[in-house]
Length: 250
Image (tube, rainbow, N blue to C red; front, top):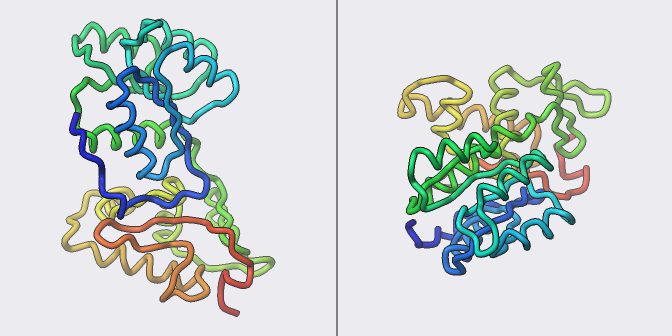
């Protein structure tokens, strides 16, 4: 594992952060994972053994569990089996056990992913995002100030007034909504919305679509509240608690 902490200047401001439970007995390793998940904008709780994990899960249900297999009181496989029996919380096994048989067993018990230590921190964070993306239901509706976007019917309204969005704008907004409060890179948007196109030639398409979206949903597109630019990375959709008057221009 690369133990370096990611730069907090790229932290993601989340208003409805997803909660992750880290079950890891190594205190240094546990703290590194927790700190970097916090920087990414997740709510994080961390425990050192299986008993503490079970006590936690009786009172709260996270969106994801990162589970070490070698715990002082439980075999991680047994804990994984119990968690999968009692709930559907996504599980990423993070273990030094790298044998193929262990991976097959962990995935067979219902783990959503299996990562072998040591691993690069960036890969772990990418796997966390991927599992949460697969296991979180896609948004059917998004409310931005007074604007209501229905992704099923591809209609947007502000009160009784229709707001015209192009197909491309709907797709970009939906992808940002699926990754709400997370930084989405231009390349990622290109691949998800435009398909397998060359980023160098198409980056302007992303920026232009975001430009027109801002004109339609922001009160002041030059100082956006909802679709923020994260310089060097991409865009982030956040829904802060702002008065309706701040939503858009009359």
